[in-house]
Image (cartoon, rainbow, N blue to C red):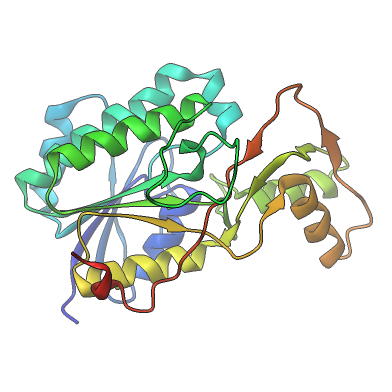
Length: 276
């Protein structure tokens, strides 16, 4: 397989840094970072925070001339996103749309990392063809970006990710990192019992993107999730028990039903065969 030039927007976050580490084994990877950077050997870095500036987005794409742009910027925490709706819109919607236009200028494939929060959570077992009706600002911005991408691009892939598990970095700890650290410090965080998802390891996302690039998959909306649907509280409980932490997480009652955002997760045996 020929080496591709890959630009990861949001490359210093939990998701972006893991993708950069895996993809750099076979490709030339450049990452953007906003406020700080934890450098990975063999990966190039550019500071970039102006997601709302279309000209700046175009300029960075033209300077790097990537074959593939992966948009991994932003937080997947709906509560955090609700607290700062302007930043959420700039990061998950405006920036995503501007980087799509920039990708078109350099004729790059555009991979947008969306979320299972685009679903209402009223039924669960969602599929790619189900109507997405998000309840939170995170999902609403993700869905708006998805619709824009589908309407403007002829070379895109949208990946709706269930919660991704793995190790983060110093600047951007993962959900499991935060859980472990909170228990070690004795600050027991609360987790909802009624928010159901299909968590999956971050390594599966890397594998999926590898296959998308190798098979030139385009114009698809894919779901990536694990085979087990579980609440965040039960997941936290099992993680702590599995690593012999003698504590149980607190139960969080937000007063609002978080719902079942789980979907039918399919790991395609041959992604090329899914193309129309």
